[in-house]
Image 1: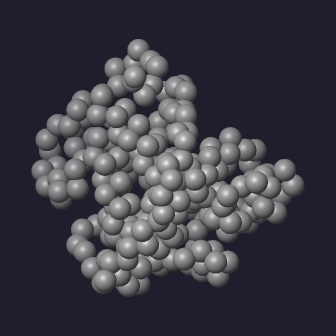
Image 2: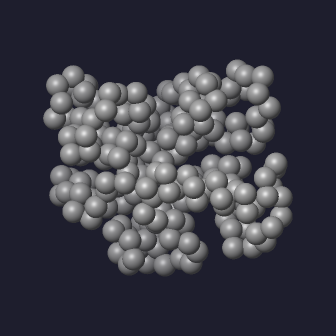
Image 3: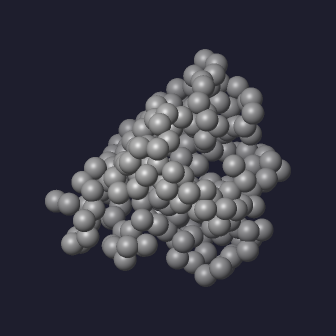
Length: 227
């Protein structure tokens, strides 16, 4: 069955990448269980649909904004909401406060990856007035807790592996499974990683590469992306 019920001419590989990401959320990652990863996606949706909440106010601090049966620690819920609704307000001090509340540095990296992917998928559906994909059932499994031998804090706030490429690529490298997940989702939306620094004039889908970069740059500006 197609992921989206629509007559819009969606490219098959684009819709398939969304379905794959949702299935991946249900499986244990490197630091979080499948149930916890799905809870992050659910929190992304709650954050998106909530009335405006200032960035300095965390959901656990607001009556009725934080369900008592949530499987995530309060610091993780706070991070999901801030990343979803106020990414332009992130600071090193805020990041440090999340770690001080018990979130492991590379567990934070995985959380960022899940939140970014969930926002990509849901914002796509919302923009085209499509129903968001339903959350699957969690799959039993234990997080692997695999850490690259060369993982260390370098240019980023978080530990990264000793890899090349743009900083947005390196940022997830401390959790290789999430770097791979990012590529599976970003390739049908944008470009394959190997092509980023390649030809900048060829066509991709209905846009030229320079048009794609114009849209990306303008979107980043509107979102106050400091990258």
